[in-house]
Length: 215
Image 1 (tube, rainbow, N blue to C red):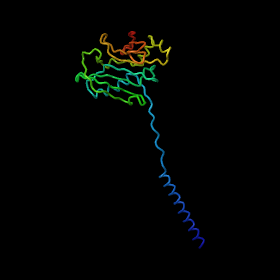
Image 2 (cartoon, one colour; image 1 turned 120 degrees about the horizontal axis):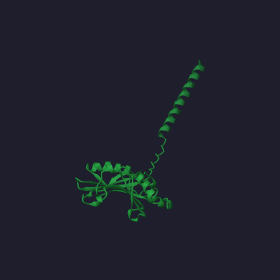
Image 3 (cartoon, one colour; image 1 turned 120 degrees about the vertical axis):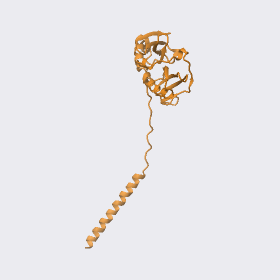
Image 4 (cartoon, helix red, strand yellow; image 1 turned 135 degrees about the vertical axis):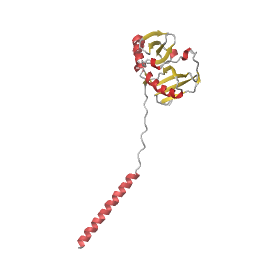
């Protein structure tokens, strides 16, 4: 009998000790400090002109239901895959005939302290006149050829000579309506900005046909 009592007491003591250790371990686990979450590192995004334009067009429609585009332009940045007709920054200008106002929208895929925040931003309204030849709106149905295709055509018509000499040759794209010929035109400019371009080539944004070398 004493042996049975001793054995029972020993088992009870062991069980109590096990429960105590388990509870201490649980508390220690619950109160252990958690490592801080890793910061999300953003990567630069690059898109063709038509893709970026469609995003900005949706935002422009919220500004004015009758909005019409009249200009789309890329900005060259080092590292941009211009050979794919892409840019990390596109600017689109829209006019509202009912408001007689225009507004600039910007799509940015860039990252860095000196770049616009990723996404779409826009400027304040400015006055617009239908008589201004430099702000003639176009119908988006004419935009059938994207900037990547325009680049391919431009390369075959003089651009390749420059990119062979300099694989990092800056290229920018400008889309606008040519009121003289009634065409929507991609202007492929080999340079960091329009005023310093080494070569300017025009491509039909509807058919993809090469049009001319521009001065």
